[in-house]
Amino acid sequence: MKLSKYSFGIGDRFGCQGSAQLAAFIEAKKLGIEITPVWNKSNREHSTIHTEPDDVRKEADKAVNDANWDGGYFVDADHINLSCVDKFIGPSDFFTLDVADYIGEESNSADVSDFVQKYKKFAGKLSIPGINEKFHVSEPDLQINAEKYLNAIKEAGNIYRHIQSVRCQVSDVSNSPPCEGGVAEGRGGFHQSNNPIIHHSNLIIEVSMDETEKPQTPLELLFILAMIADEKIPAQTIAPKFSGRFNKGVEYVGDVAQFAKEFEDDLAVIQFAIKSFGSNENLKLSVHSGSDKFAIYPAINKAIKKYDTGVHVKTAGTTWLEELIGLAESGGEALNIAKEIYRKAFDRYDELAAPYATVIDIDHEELPKPDDVDSWDSTKYVDSLRHDRTNVNYNQSFRQLLHVGYKIAAELGDKYINALKENKDIVAKNVTENILERHIKIIFAK
Ligand SMILES: [Zn+2]
Image 1 (cartoon, rainbow, N blue to C red):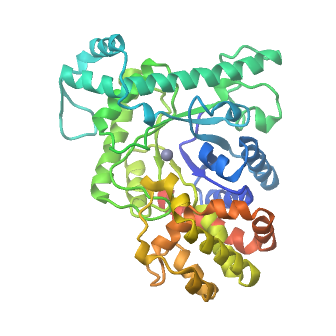
Image 2 (cartoon, rainbow, N blue to C red):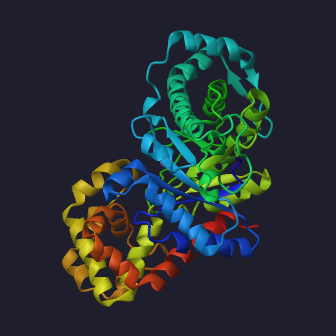
Image 3 (cartoon, rainbow, N blue to C red):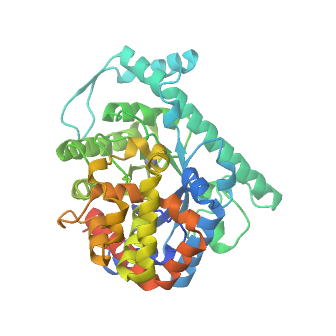
């Protein structure tokens, strides 16, 4: 199974917006931009909201069937590791193997020297087509990279082989053909065709190391890709950490020109790895955007056009915030619910912010008092929350606190879900427009 050239990751915390999200892809297709939707949800989100990976599968299948979407689509087990992957294996066909925590852990010294032996042919002056400057690689550089990353990539191999073996066991039970080869055609594998055969060839593998302190340089990425190839992980996407800050739901903070250079260099490195290491020829970059990185979208668009290559861009909580915007816009009881969520999020700041401490920058001075927010009308709430930096009322601290405050909505249970249902159209309009106008059209525009 090949991931198409352009794919876009959508998160839906409460599982109610699958159709509204897909509507953005349908509109894009009418404009001649074909993008594969990938519904992603991490273990962290599932445990906060008390949902199961199966819920995401059901949502995606239903949205696709209701709309008669004839393109591919996937369900991404986002940021999983060995300790939580099992419940994702059945319902998912895209796996993001998160090995960031293993970076820098001591690698086996025999493995390290094997790696240095194998790749010392790249030592000396190394030129990579598409990158102007020449790299100087020494044997100690190889050693340092192997010590830093080998253990993490070995772990990615362990997770990949575990997923593969579980999927094979299930397929063996159902008397399917052997796992090699598998069903490579169709639109996404057994789930869509209701065929009980589970084939590991139907899965997409991503390796992610974006949740680290320091970005990986293009040269580091090169050696990481060598390790992934050696470990025989058929990764189709790789999510490095780029320089700059990718805070949740708000604008990119960093040097856009530097990001653009790094992104283009990474694309060149991937092409080099495909030729030199036999990496998956469909390999492309995955940008874990944290949503709403409008400043770098034009740079991504320019680079993928220039190199005629694909990209996968993940978003997450941006849809949940559009739900809140829709409720606030509706006024009345729905606006009151949006206000109640802010008040509770404000009161429970420490608890809600803690899991996201490294990916939010909230200025406490900027946070409005809940009593003040209670006096706001629809427009004021919507303007404060909607990510429109030209609006004087836009408040990115307010937005970030609500972004991490989805636990409050989860605790409201039916009260929240019913409000979404009662205001379905206005919420859906916001969800679709946000994905289509602010994300898809800018990133993938022709
Ligand atoms: Zn990520």
